[in-house]
Picture 1 (cartoon, rainbow, N blue to C red):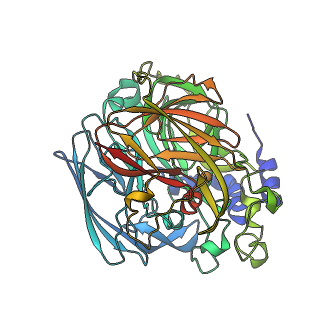
Picture 2: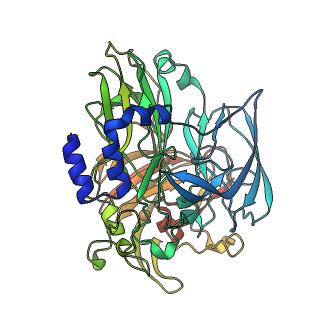
Length: 512
Ligand SMILES: [Cu+2]
């Protein structure tokens, strides 16, 4: 457990972090006024279903946003960072009247929802041009697990750029899990983790300034659009944190000073029972739902992001490959340090603060959350190798089984011969995913969740449903997936979204 005192933090901040972070640490002395302003840190509006219908207008557009005291022009849904939170229940109908007022084509993906990959549902092959409208409409299935899901753009080639602009929001499905008395009694907070980089005019840094091979990371890290917001825990309280990594490439390795997390869900899906962990590693796309007991001394506790090394292109001197314009350090932006120095290799960073004023016995934890049953034996075992390399068509690319993704947002949806993988509806398969590259890759499959069977041949001990699994460099992860309910074409890909845009994606046809 890393625990630094304030002095050490200021020292580290002065030595290395950008001005935002330093200002933040110095601000801790006067945190009372700051936290009053920022308490109840989730300011984004919420749209809930009523009478079985969730209906809203959603507009993607560039909007001026106050980003840590600076005016920034970010990409938003309805002018909000993060986007409005949507809430529905199993059996509800969802109707989203979508307008694209971006300067690029876009679309919507509903990450983790078990809905059709076709038509007006989770169809990533749609292309909604600037100025166009599109009506998304689908039903949340009765068998949809309650949980923390999210929505974001998914037009191949533009995904990283649009996510990095800020386009992401929570999609919560309420259900049985929310009715467990101990969970119901907890105070619920949502934490959407995003990172941004803006220039001196408040404009988003363009991709030519970013390290696309490494995967772009921003130097301003926000929780619900704010730098280091506070969350207050009532006396004797149990805090339920629902955390989403909505960053393009950044991994978060989270710890809360002096507290354990009692994890109740992974990627939105409930575990059998709470598991106590001191750290949570969240790759892009992943979610964690945790309970925190407010049973320590009254005070303020920082939610820290600990260093994590996700690998880099060694040929570039171990510091990742820069875009054409090189390091940002010389241009006086955000404190003058080179961009790769902010890659969270060496500094803990406070993302948020949890505070409580009185110490009493905490509410009890739940015992039983779900019953996860094992899937039947697979009919097929497929192998996928993740790597990078030169591709004749596109130059340096990220590859699955030696091939870059061939579809492109400038062309029509990929034709039949470009399908990489065909499976049969209602069958169970094992996918063995091997990472022979030099960077970690979080592997995500749309529409159906899966279970991890083994890592490097060692059986996985924790039963869980996931939609995104980290495959570390040198690692082989075996997952078991049941293609159920919905036929049609969808995708699997690396959720470092620059890697996805640079080719690490495949088409998946689920044949009826
Ligand atoms: Cu990757």
